[in-house]
Length: 382
Image (cartoon, rainbow, N blue to C red):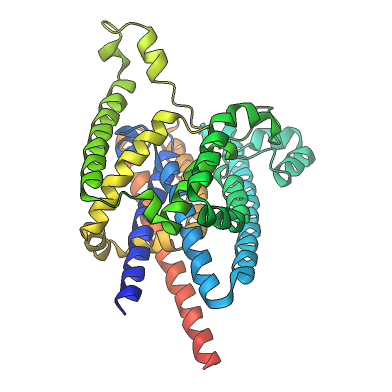
């Protein structure tokens, strides 16, 4: 019974963190957002994408283990591959929605920067070619670009689970090697622009794999002795403080440019997201350990009790991601349309609050709807 309660609590904690990340993703993709100035990307060297991908790996491992225990490894693998197909379909839906909203904004002559990112202008010039590029994943519109990588990872998760279980250290070593080679492997990805995907799966597989391994082999990922945990905590605190300082300086070049040699920021501040820059990875791992300690202390679970709607968003993350991606474009169009250009902060804040309220409301409705269907199916089976 305690094991079941612990598993349920852990799932709630994961859903809460993922729900917060999804809210960050929505407001971060609204140009001129006020709340976007206070999301995690402004205070450390990574953003919500790292959280989303790490938790995707953790959740994939959890789902595989649960299905394997009930139905066997074969069924578990086939269901994850089926989930990969669903994610691909979600990408196509999101991409089409981006095109539709981009075309609407262009038709209404709203000067929102998102119009170009939605690929609507490219679609107007070459409609058939653009649709074929979407299907082949060589063109990935605004916000939807994380889903192709996610679909690939989930499809390959059964193989990754077997490798991580059997030889966890070799799994990590191969993953790190692939991450280091990622920039060289970028041309292998289908791309209409010749620049690869926005999220290079050869690099980001490391983040997904670490999440996977955290669920499968915590004995490998976590130090077992008190001294080791204490040292890791001290290192994590140091990494976090350095990340906060670097993030502060990164957004304020006028603070360091008068006295810092020019080669130092060139060395420290390139943080390419496409291939998961090392500083982004280290910054994430430092804070991830501190969040893990907070979860062990029960703080995250207590917070989840007061943030039920956010937990619902995280629990139904794929639907909420697609809805949130559409919402970010619509809200940007709304605020830019009202202001006739870049919105003043009161207008932008109003748009942010509407976006978050809609995400919480629709996400909660979707969760209740799915739960009602699940209960109805169980009662019919009984």
